[in-house]
Image (cartoon, rainbow, N blue to C red; front, side, top):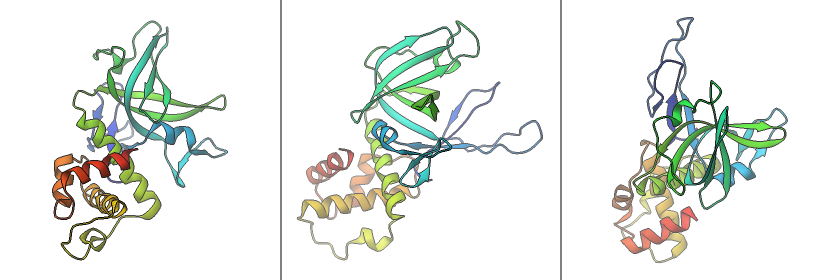
Length: 232
């Protein structure tokens, strides 16, 4: 599980917590292990492999708890569930939040204002229902700072790199000398390495911090172009 995911846990009596690794005791006095939610795109969910036991696999790694970010394009209220259609520019997917009681709004939707075309961050569990892929939502927040969207897609990219290639070493980031990079491919690779390096130790990556890590070899327009290339 890559390092830029989020911890999240909930129980029947307390509010849900994101990025909180504090463990709580269960009824037997044992510590409950917090879930690690992995940032993904909706296309990754649509395209990933599903094993015979209904486990989702991305690049060979089993993933069940995910974070998705995107625009809410519709909302449907039903007696026992609320269904949101989310689009993140890689695809559109339905996220279902279930209620504990009929005609009662799901708990995590009771204190959030959701209007069409607002941007949201959703924490959910991947499921298979009647041979169809589904996301069951467990928590949702509004996105008001669009840097959060950029940060999400950077986290997705870093996780993808780590799953495929493992963590990069310091020498992969150093580049050997202080000469400016000229090849677009080299610039993208250098920025990728910097993001991977930062992501090994931090849960959140800010664009300013990422640029500081590469500005010795890359100017800001080149950096922005590389980020756009990585997200696309």
